[in-house]
Length: 291
Length: 161
Ligand code: FES
Ligand code: FES
Image 1 (tube, protein in one colour):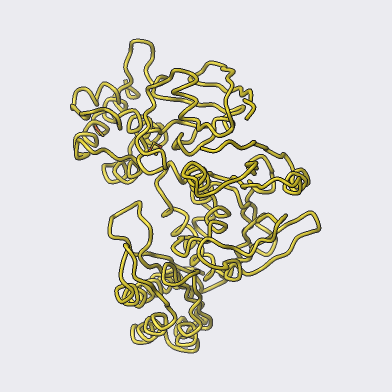
Image 2 (image 1 turned 135 degrees about the horizontal axis):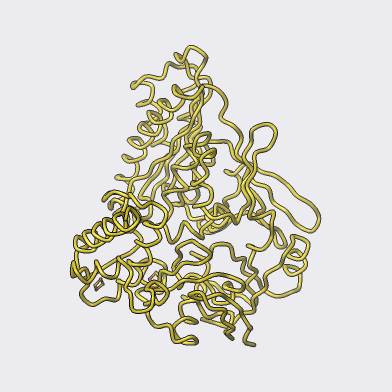
């Protein structure tokens, strides 16, 4: 590995100062991607900035309106082991408990998974359908943006120099609403998605009509994708198999998959419709259980 | 690059060591501290051979920088036995012949111990799922799972007694 300096700021102010010291930086949260990439020469930097000593980035709390705010560097295992999070946001747990094995989950963070910006990452579609927002900070203040606007291409995000991803805010799904995320991999565990889908449904009080819907897709485009077509096929309809199949077909239209070692474009397009239907069925079941 | 001074508690002893920021915790353990029980399988986070406990959580030490261990508590395979008394998992791995080349074994034992310490009644499916981050190219896994189940039984009996 090339040599670099190591800095572990204890506050955001300190981190912004280090970021502006003119050296090239690599941010470190769980390190499960970054340390491997540095070792393999796929990343280079003068200094590694370890973010895990900054309290804001390691916390997790419920805001008064029921939004869950998760520090960007908080390890996945600490998120999905929280019983309250698991109860209120099962669709988030679907993704958080799927990323890597237990050794990876002890360290890897949502912030790292997002910043790494892999089109096949598991957390983006799950967060997109939940309507999550990202809090981005710099020495001049903070800004927020919807998670789907964070990705600029494979491995690229919209953070400007000097900016840090601070937190992920997940709003409460509300009554009669829930989300679900799943992926297709050729193995049982520990693999990268060939294709993945997240779905969110909000039903009316009778449970017979879809009031709001979101569908997001992974590994079938240069970034995770929202399917506006799938959402349009759902809203105002009854939550039936036929309607879900139409949404699945619309989602397949949204996908712009490529052929690579993990799967062909045609297989991925087919998977998108199947996974979308299953994600919708999973979300429907949870929404019916949610009160 | 200047070497940094790091203080950590390793297998119950306070240890001071010097390392370069680019050295992984795995490299520090093996090359600086002579704790060669922890193995390198892949050096990229896929195999779990380098598993150690870091502040109560199991991690791949090849994906941790040595400098990150500052102030931390680390347990390696060397810290699992009590003197000459093998841990029930170590004993069970021997009795079930759950190893061939042995490269994966320290990682499996650290991993299985992490699970059984938290969930003393984990069933076979839970054990297999938990150990999905540990790869073995020799045994085909069945003997490893049998050994973990046997150790679990022994540990349950020991707590009853
Ligand atoms: S050597 Fe660390 S995971 Fe394989
Ligand atoms: S015994 Fe050889 S890798 Fe497991």
